[in-house]
Image (cartoon, rainbow over all chains, first blue to last red; front, side):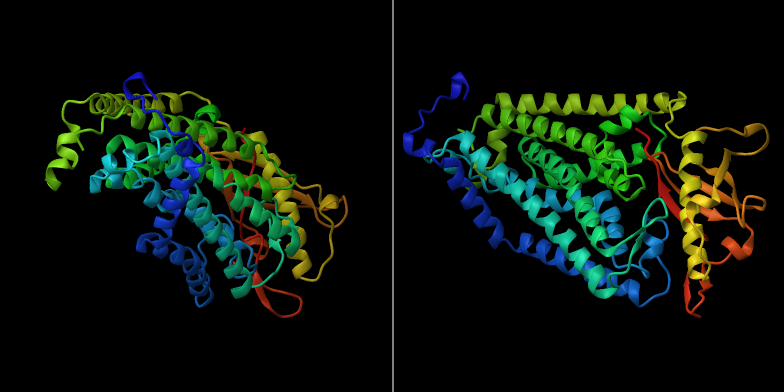
Length: 285
Length: 172
């Protein structure tokens, strides 16, 4: 709270206020048609993709593991992960994060919610946690569904790794799950960018489209042969950190750096969003 | 009333909007600076892709896939006895180089086929991406890497692991 904006929080509001906002926001998200459609798409799309691959003989050769989609079911979730990291995951998470604050501007409801017994910090924390939860749920749904689609449609054959070694079904399952888990940090970082743009722009379109455009610009930059430190700082790099898991011997440095860089993006954008929201004058609207 | 309370009035004459605009200006300035700086940085020879890393990644990957291919054809070999070596370079003639991402890398693989006396070789064209992942495209001999599928010892048509293969190495 700034000196200009001192609102003595009552003890009741201070206790569990964030949790109340969080519950309320997640309840709203669960009932929205938009979020339900996204969840449905995350579950159904991998099965459609696997089925479409099955009925044709060609393979998506320009993606890692694309050549193996007919030979091992474990290649399917990795091809999906390769595509999803390019723009789908940033877009899916921004659908909620980019609008969760801007929606209050659109409906002109800031004064209504901020004059209730929840402080500005609690409203911010509750909404932020709801958007982060949604990001995790969407990533888990898409990852689990693509693994299931690969295993059920193609099968549990051993997978040829990125050093030519055969990876058995049990180990391949663990590696696929680890690869999808490694997408969580950059997804949460993009959620943070969506929240920041949602607060700063007061516009849902900017909040949803902004992170996607930022992600695509970083992808373009990553096509240039940049120095490794610059490449490490791009938010598109952590989405490829899982490659090292499938090499022999595996290398895990990119996973660590990806998590650190993503955490930095998340902290800076969420901190920036909070600073902007805290200073905002809502008396006019 | 409802339109009046929406964004229009909230945006006028308050500190946060000015702060927001300043943030947007800073963001644009940063983006412009990045676009100017990135090609300049790319011009420097700071690539993480070099011949040693490419050689070290391609040779064992080829050996493992060769073992797999021979297994499909019903012949048992061990990757270690092959002692596969890769000799990769980028471009040809006066533009030849040993560094940098590009689709003009070529590799000659050599390995001991039947005992230490008989050396076999194979050629590949490589597309090495800046992130350390590459695609190797078989360029002869054709019975080794010339066809996308091969007939396994049990008569089935299977993917030829040596036709094209992907791999990644650590650039950090």
